[in-house]
Length: 593
Image (cartoon, rainbow, N blue to C red; front, side, top):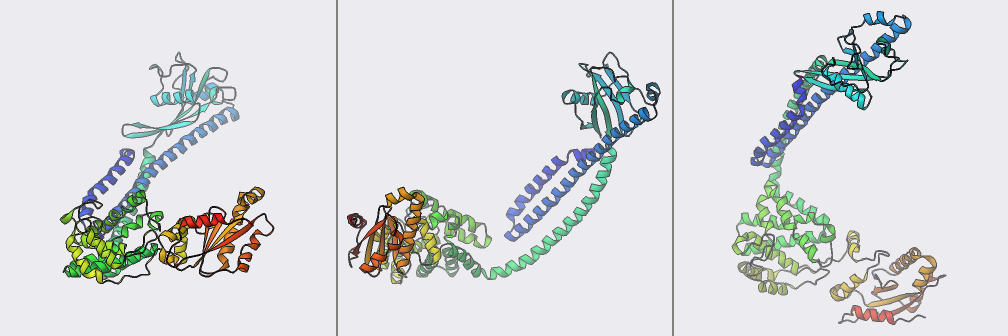
């Protein structure tokens, strides 16, 4: 039984390793639902095994605690008994000594030991002269007593330890006693008037009884845990059967589960969601033209709907960025195809889609990613998806790049035949995609409040939340359609802001800037406010503000301060875009009044 407790930790770790190793290969070979069921069984077994091991360990700790309590209770009892004999009954040292079992007296070894007539637990008094060699074989101390004497030499404090002797375990303890006039025990051996001695009460407790009691209690608890484990296994089996039935029913509604996954993507980025649907539509047109079988068309459709699911792991700062990606950002976003593969390949009902999705960015000439496959090495359905994906990217308006017309996109695809795209699929694209009507409303510009908040992360001034110069430059250079909504530009220059900051502090200056922008944003509906060059502002307007309106524009904000402002109008030409350089020149040409 002692061996059982001593090796608990080793057996516990070995058991956990055996459970994990023994079940690993079995789980790999099983179907997904069975894998889940067996995994739950393994986890449940580990939990029960852990509880059992902890119970055994705590039982041993409890046995040690009980033995220790009894040991120190015996010491307290001895102290009380000796005090009673000496003080109350006034028994002299010789008569008291005759009532005790005297094992050793002071000798040349400088050791005095008295073993009291108590067997359970065994109690003895040991006193040692300073600088005595207690390890000397001539002394009559046991090895455990010598060890505890060493502790008294080092620390002179109450202590105990567990001593393993063959098949038995003993708790050995000592409580120190100072050798002086007040030491009742010292009077037994005449040491109360001697200097240079130290010692204490030594106790040895055989732990067999305590361990037996703990073992019986633990075994009773283990039987109860075993019953709970069996009930748990029965519940898992029942749950597996019920779940298996439910999964079978779900598989019949496979299409529904695909669109549920698409919904997850839609909620994160509305542009990506629209892209997914359009790519699926174009892929089906190509597959029909290429006489792909109905089974493979079904696979292609589902793969198209899920081809960007790996973007769920792409950081928002990259995925939702409405501008052109840097080289590092592009390198990070390329990882989405591998992530898509990893997500889909781990679900049995999507494994057939995983390879298609994995290679939809491979190029026909081998220059694509993630594996650089070439020609026939790329799954044919992946090659169809590549063309559909590329066509949608070309015909979609982006912040940093205007859309191509359908014919321009077809020409681009034809140009990339044999390089990025399979020539056979390119011919089918010419036949069917040239007849497609693309949605002209597709854009990355913000429409909803949520999209505006996302947009502000990239294109709004951090202090005032007005649009920044970067966005104005994009509108002027790339977004002709968006800019055509506005017919007038109102330039506003606020003067003396440096003086205002000096008089009131930078924080107050920021507050004033925010106040100015808030006023400009409320002045008229459906216009854009930009902050440029620190103290200058630009308004893109659909209609002109008359001179009286301009005078009232920031009157409240500058009234009572050193600030004042000047304005200038620029009409946007019908057929020519004004550039940033012209605007900057115009702003700096505004003179102070």
